[in-house]
Length: 556
Image (tube, rainbow, N blue to C red; front, side):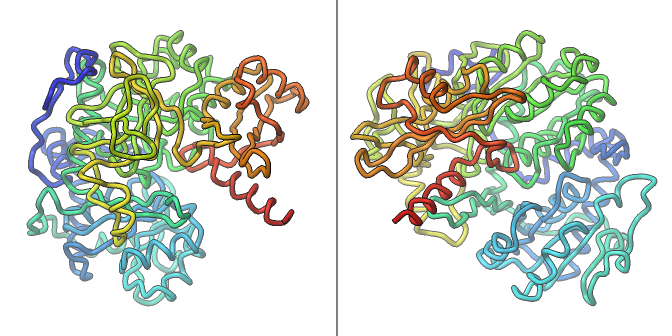
């Protein structure tokens, strides 16, 4: 590994390169089960499972799935929120050498059908609340094995459901009953290599069709090690017996899967499992723990917690250890508030295609506001010309981020065309445009596909969004390009005002005019009560863009 400009900014106990163990992903868990067998591995509304109990249940489930005919290379849909059943299912599937396909419980029937058909999935592990959505799909898509659970089955005092309670059809299996039917806890005898696929993570495609990023055992091991060593300055100080991670980020997303679940395995941490984001409930859960070592989050979640009236009484400044933010940029005032509270934090960047990691600000060292930070160990990053896709841009100029290293996916499942477009000569083309400063810190300018071309000028919506957020009445905002006969595209802003505030379109436009070059100023402002968001709280520009496209079609 060559010395890079960013290496000198690594924290004192973070290595610039790592020797990766050639092990399957589940070996990270076995390490914890062998070292701290009696420590709680999961805490689900106060009900705990120790590492040893989790080991026994996941191995029994692996052997049960094996008996049902699941074998190495088979795709198994895990269609669950954050709960002990998710962790058991994940470990069971990868221990068999089968491939976990993460399924969003909120996905529509159409999205699920596409993923089931694309992956040739024959087994799905699902839960009571989404069974109405799943039932017709099982019949239509030829799924052979369905295993269902009730989310509350793992909470003491709620009782355990049975197949008849869930009205399961003939041949379908109940999660807890299936576990009870197998006592075998021996490890499945499966040969697994680092390049074997472990996980398929679907992500939005540029054509609107989702693409399944294939992440290998080696990718998961590398990403878990990266997330772990980056937290060395704070986490290594906490004795393993006291390590906890607050898992609100969904495990069916690569970020939660690596930075909460797999991180917890490798750091012997108890996972505080939160299946849904409900602010009052979450604050109640936080209040049950004296100190939370690690809290991976997104800006909308951090804002909701810090601004809540109950936050003051919780002493969050003392209660939260390391806070990590990803998925969207943290506004400056939010960063300053976290720093004022004395909470350690790091803001980072990654994609499903890079096993959710890529770059981050050092935990202890130099942080730059508005920057995604510096690349992780062994992750090589370049900025290339947006047009050519091959030439490196001059220092300080915007270019597309391309990455190469142990985090990069194997490719997209069953989609060689998209794989060839995204990975060229081993470099992952991210579609994100950034600048790099003299210290090797990267600043995202925008998504390549979000770039607005108005009157021949390239406009990056992030520049406009930053200004909109500075307006004292604005709570949330996003800008995008809409079709315009004269300019090609024109800038439109969507704004959510703070409660009790009112503003006019002219007021917002005038505010922008004082702070932006003329061609960047929004021409139209639409006020909304809320903006469409993804499961992890990222504002979905593409939904707004689709709405605008529909409008322009009707006008024509």
